[in-house]
Image (cartoon, rainbow, N blue to C red; front, side, top):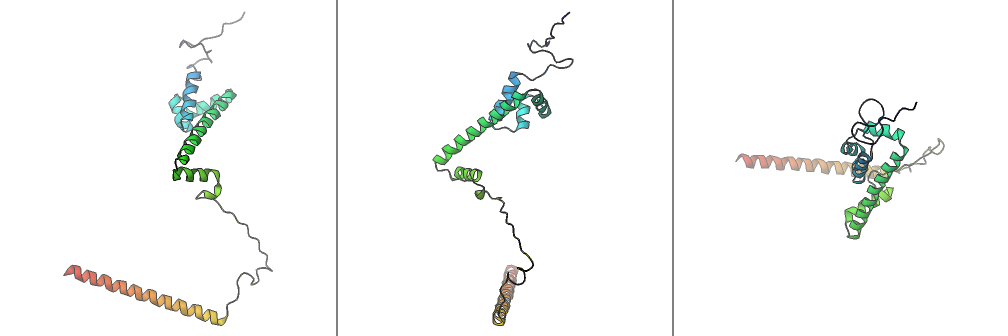
Length: 173
């Protein structure tokens, strides 16, 4: 004898998945989720708009391979909207939009772009080849220039202190 397929008691035509609440995995919920994602919301916020939790969405994705495709399509819709908006802004000579586009397209325009350099040196190459020797005259010249710079710095500091002292005296009077 064949048993009838159970129906939800909430009037939906979707089958019951056993005891407990009926599933929210329906077209209305998924449409709200995808619209929120296409409007630029992060996944957590989009789930809140759809009335589900992030873990619930993850669980649904395990049972429904088409869900991942719908989510990716919604994200691609957002990307297309953003690119169109950026293109219109660049056409109107908005330098900020142009700068953002350059940073996205070309890593060298990003502030935090990593520059990696590899240096290899062996012991025989390190034996004095990296720094040219200075003549005794050049060393003496550099030492004299340093001494003068330090003297000027000290004199400047003393002058600033005198000026502050004069200002204090004027303010007292």
